[in-house]
Length: 53
Image (cartoon, rainbow, N blue to C red; front, side):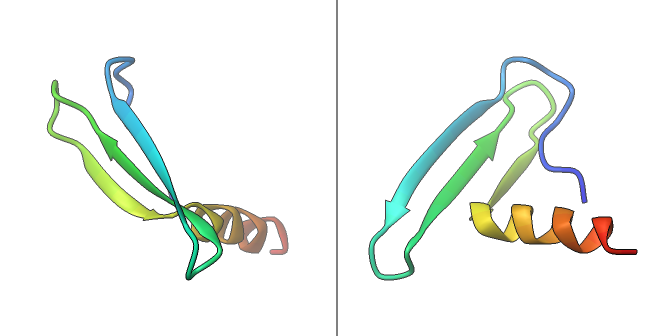
């Protein structure tokens, strides 16, 4: 899974979710309209799953 785009102008905002205990992340690029949002530990979990193959 790839999160982000190739442009350096993308906005990345994170917000601590006290109830969930993880950071919630928003990524937006005004050049290509790329948009992603989700919990950051989901990204880390997906990367570790790929390492175990």
